[in-house]
Image 1: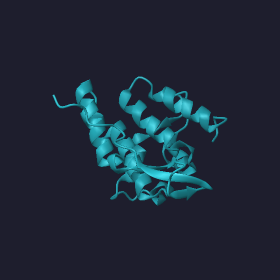
Image 2 (image 1 turned 120 degrees about the vertical axis):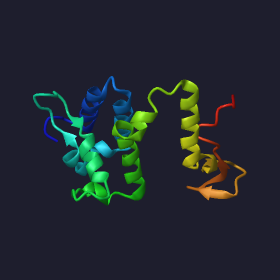
Image 3 (image 1 turned 30 degrees about the vertical axis):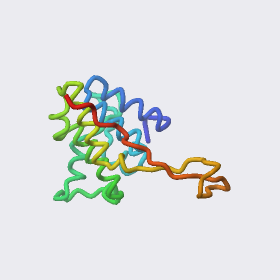
Image 4 (image 1 turned 135 degrees about the vertical axis):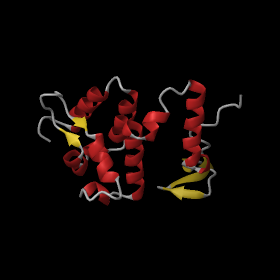
Length: 161
């Protein structure tokens, strides 16, 4: 990508552009940490290069919204992503420019904790399990005995008030 030496440099520019606006900061981090900013289709169709108005790359949230709109005629390779990947993009877009950007800012800490727990529950994190090393385990993974354990909720429900 012209104007940056690496994905790390690109991501730092995107973070710097979003800095100071929590909705953009959160949405940008989702895209960086999920690997979307390293994808050529995302870079070509959603990122805007530095210009007279901005000295760094930035995410064009309107373009992303248009690509994600099922009624849009705009072509993009982004649409070839898996269902889960597209859901993540829609969530990031909603954080930056959609309902979440209107509804979450301004919530107090207690209500944010409830929302985080609800999202973790909605994703089924309370049902997730993992394979762990266990000398007494009944499964073998890479030549080692292992067991399956339930992980518990990613973000537990806060106490009721």
